[in-house]
Length: 245
Image 1 (spheres, helix red, strand yellow):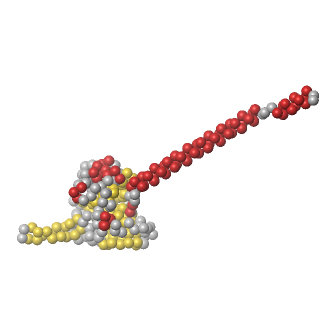
Image 2: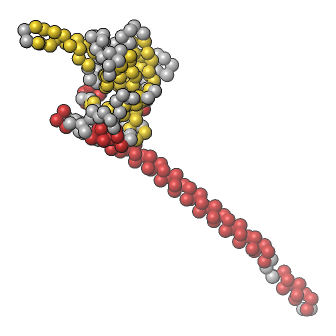
Image 3: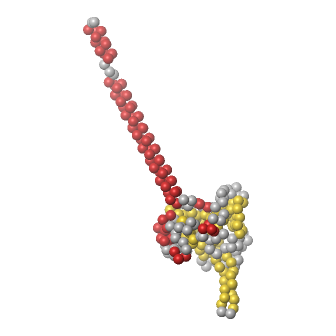
């Protein structure tokens, strides 16, 4: 074999180092991309699991976590009244202007509410909240007055009917108001007028679908006139109904 032929064959057997380096870089890039993709998938899975854990912890009740002042207010609820709210699960469930409605679950299987208004903030005027009996909370439409001042009353409630997006509320002055639902079916609205000014306010509240059709209705006593004894005489006082259906 001639020396020229040997050198030619050796040249053919010698690797192309530029090609080897290029392949090495390509493999490194592919490995890096796979690691990055796996890391992103892991982060996404962790986020999904975290969201699922929060939903599982709060159950059906969802919303933005309540501020410390609201959690503290729920913590002042008097257990002798029959309920044990869970302040740590409190969330914002409805809002209208500067008024907010917060809800939390309780040991008794229902929920409790705290209303926050410009004249009644949980950090300056706490009341412990308003709780609902389990048998009442299971009703399709629940409503009641959660706060009142000299010239306004605050109405709150919840609709548990599938497909409901709002409620239609007849007001004491004869007009009608449509109130959109917040999270978990809750709603909130303020009505001008002195508490118990009408002495008897029992509106037929309708739950409406997104298309505006009625999906449920309930007549609920929000304000009632009740007899009260004053010695030998009998007078009348207006009772602001709590949340019930």
